[in-house]
Length: 416
Figure: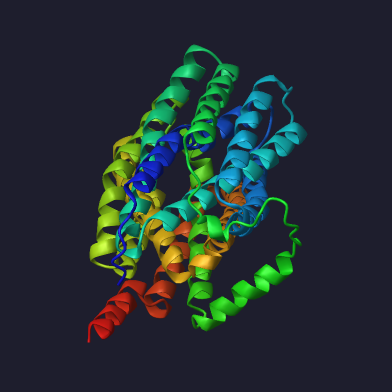
């Protein structure tokens, strides 16, 4: 196992990066809460809302993998700034452009194109900085920033919309993200080694097909472990995104909560994420990636079934807490697993491919979630999500080895 230590300057650089990412987490945590209700005002039904949610994730399929690949050649920071700038711009457009399904479709596409560059780059930067023995905790810290966003975002959105209107909300989000953009431009440093960054004047052929072939070859060299993991992630994300983007509508239609009341349900998720993410990171480093993944997925199976039987807000609060712990655990563990399994020279591309698989599954889930709810109700969506999580659980349990065990065996062999 690597005994490399982290340069204190780069450690501080990562903390600054995570601090700048909080505004992104604050705003993105409100999108699934606010946009379905906003779209509904313009006569968009649940199936249409599912399409509008999914087009944003669909855009991320392309932007994530391209940004990941080229950040391996030209550095992480340029793509971090590009994605953040695009994401900020869309909020201002939402505030001032007249609303319609076609307009929402275009804006969501641009939003997804920009936003889904950002997680790919941040995770790659974390992997550049931290050795394997600290990587789980580094990913846990990034997940914690999501928890901060989920706590502040829904409460702020509920207040802004209740006391003002949707325009106030969009302007606040745009301004907040611009603040992060300024911090990134002025203070966040590049993490990719300078000798790996191609000179600015050097011409590079854009050959995505060749890059894909290289990655497929790497997957085969790993015994298709990465491919199996990505299939499991696909099932999990398809099921989960049948429910999560439309959860505000579930709270309104079934439990009769308004947006202010719903904000507390989302804030609960934030508190649980803040508590669970560092624990998940610590357990990833101390116990291993695979056991933590299995625990998180088992909790997801349980919560999806429980939602389908819930009849009161008190019960939903309890389920939501466990669901949030499971989601934070899985997010931290999946990011760490992918980083372990992909070689350093293909790190950005590997994270981009993972992001693309994740967003593709979100696209499918959002579309089918709306259709299932329109035809079979929320119970049908929750039970489908439960089944998908169960498939993911058994796939990883039976087919994916724990990379931390392999690292320990290698370390012992080296000592001998």
